[in-house]
Length: 387
Ligand code: PLP
Image (cartoon, rainbow, N blue to C red; front, side):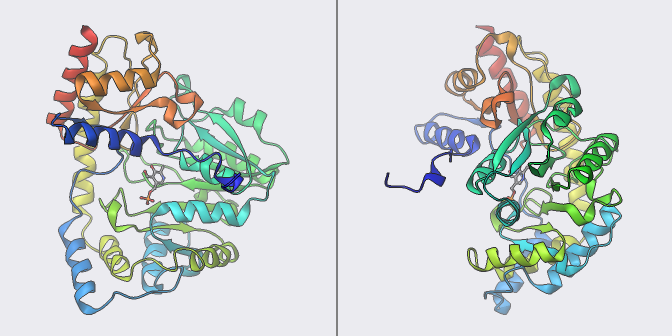
């Protein structure tokens, strides 16, 4: 074999594959409506861009500490702690180029070959990839539509055992938009303590929650902060996907190990990006609130329209910016249907199967696009499926 066996299980993320295919069709002159990629369609807010430019022209173009600038970590610790009602110290914050490195390196720092890791399925594809790269055993926890895709305590209780080292949670969820309730988090916390496991709580969509509800964090449950890695970042909240800025909050001993992994891999996060991050947190939050209101309007439009397509039925997601309709009554697999819709309707979206086996029977629509596009895209799908 030429390549290391650890690369054997790696598969591309569906979003990048469908985006590439959609871009190819566009290059050939087709007009495509995009629901495939999970990134805000808004520009990064102007005050953040200004802060980034100011940092560049001031000469903040160097390496920083591998765990991030202390000034940014202080700001993150205060903001993230206040929002979850917990006390976070700057040395418990590890900043990286995106949330992905915080997810990946915390997993590498914790998982020994053979350790079991419970992760949500359907779920963000990076979880399974990083568990396998660390030599861990991925244990898929099914998220079921009958439980609003939230959390299935029965299957969880069957899966957790003394081999379980880590439990990964993602609330609000990609791809289902579901939020895990406080009662379910308390159940998970009790089991995590009983079996002495770590919890990785990916809260990157924590601000994307609708109808005035709040997203509870497992880190706020007494006894949990010392065994939780809380993941959040700037990509979604501040429309900063390309700036690459995210973070993990974890006990300082683990933060030191993750810092070493950062040091020997990415080196550090871009300095000017980190200055922009300080402005994102300390500046006005008005635009964040406005975009959340806009996402709620879009969610309402897309869910109502999806439910008018023959063979589709869609629950109302509570958070994130994804709708996850059930398409089982179309009689097609999710990847055949997604392909057909791309080719015949010129609408790009993701098959549920690209989020794991329990995603089969569903499609993921990212509604980070205008209401006009949503209405047009769904009308085109309805036309094609009607025929
Ligand atoms: N976690 C989830 C659930 C996501 O959906 C994403 C991005 O799609 C990420 C993490 C990665 O975010 P970042 O751009 O900060 O690396």
